[in-house]
Image (cartoon, rainbow, N blue to C red):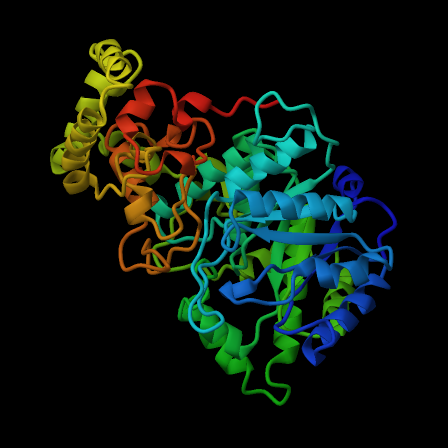
Length: 519
């Protein structure tokens, strides 16, 4: 049972253990919920576990709210981490829930975009995604500063004291998937994230790379390695990409199938694999291990016991063994031949591609080239026609409605065929290499990818390439990909829907004018 605040533990030198509790459908009195509660009580009584983390409608299905289960565990004196996902509520609902969490003493929150809903009462539920994980981190950070970001000039509210966590995965196959996620992680840290939980994976080299990249980019906050206790069923599901972003390679699946034929159905192998991953994360310099899986509390405890019995240097050999990478997987750093992990040298092929990518691709993207040219002539603040355009829209702002409608129709006549514009009025085309998040992103992600791609960059929901992978390709052709998320946090203003995005841009009404100045 943890006796110290989780934020204080993050500042210390101790290697921490966290465990995930998965909520279930039904009330707290349901048998499945009772099992989760009993598991929480068992782990809360174990002083080695500093944090119990509770899921928020995992896999997009309606389940018991995490704080309902969390109240019972928090009352035992255990630090609890509440998952807060953007899929089921708009920004007002998320902020109202955050006020409630703070009022009840839930100060640890994992901010996530969340899974696309897959089912619901009398049919599939509609997703919300009014803001994304970056926007949610900014919202919680602003609440920590004592300001309500909804109303300008309002007197400060009581400060909240959230320790804000975020999720990350660099376990992706293609450069165009990995690098935008790195850039998004940097943005999350800049907006106030206090700790990171990496996604489930079984590749020590990529785990090592994440820490090295964060150190290199000067955004090294505490990171928890996600140690998931596999089973044959889970491995098969991950291998089929039923959970996008959780890779199980052909090699690992073959080993799982082999071990699962043993008398104990592979339990010894699965427990030992998890214990070795804990040892690796400790040896690499992770802040802690985040244990998950559909197992009993005693299994988590056995994993900790085993990991504690390993010798200090055992992780070096384990790290060489547990490298179940994907075929042709991209790595940011060159391999260290001695450790089998990352060196400090950036991938030479990647550096060469950055030099060579600026040649030839421009001609293959004529629509994007045209959009860039139009932006640089008219829409950029230093564009030669920006001031005349601003003056024109200011002069026609209060024109008779027929004139306003005609101008708006002209705008839509150009933007719908070119970009699939859905008339949101708060346009992010310049932010995403002229790809529309309203029509081309299932989760309307405006601050980087959600991490839910499968099959080398395909959206987990729709049958097309992730727009952020496509934006990365477009920007890399011009040598601009590293700055693709350097701008202010984008939070769409729904009040502008159906109005002229051009007018809103020139008259300073959209997110480009609001910026993200921190209080």
